[in-house]
Length: 248
Image 1 (tube, rainbow, N blue to C red):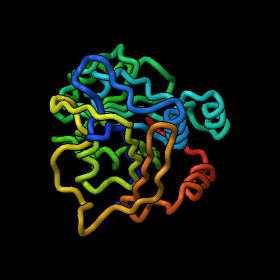
Image 2 (image 1 turned 120 degrees about the horizontal axis):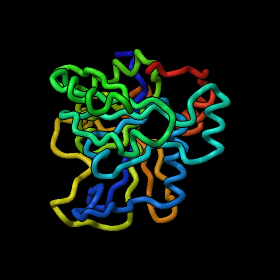
Image 3 (image 1 turned 90 degrees about the vertical axis):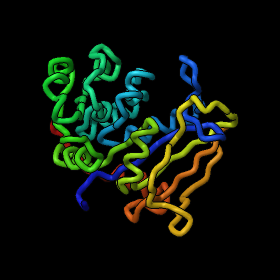
Image 4 (image 1 turned 45 degrees about the vertical axis):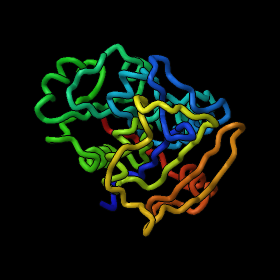
């Protein structure tokens, strides 16, 4: 699929690979400087995708935080923040969650054919519910997003969503941040679970960059030939993109 969006995966984890702990309180795995970096990456994307479990557990806003970056997007004919996207198997999402109520941009909910009616009854006033087929696959989602004008997609998790995009071979780049501590609890969610990944000892991913950001470490991996060799190339490509609206 050559016309699919460029897909960038982003994740922060502990040294032992956990993206949260087993408590009800959200575990902070990043710092202010790295969160600002993530904000800049968000600002360069057309859409941000998270799984329904992340919407329920973390109640994320998924907005560009920097006023300057929002203004720059508007000046280029784009909405202040990227389109928000989630995938659900049941349609059981709270329409008052910040994913739906914060920000003026489009919100897209992909669900299986059998739950479309239920999801539209529950979420139709706050989002566009899309029939993603039975079952919903990452390939179906990115194909529909491409048809809506999305050229650059940021996938922020959780673990099940990352596994689905990685095992489907639909990831072009991975930004992986490691926090300087362990979680050590098998009840907690991990970055990825089991799967048949295209990258293995005989076909490793390319390391593009390793950067210390205060007390965390960022590693950027190229997962496809579409990934620029360096960050400067990536930044120029993002800045030079013509403004293109996303069709809701």
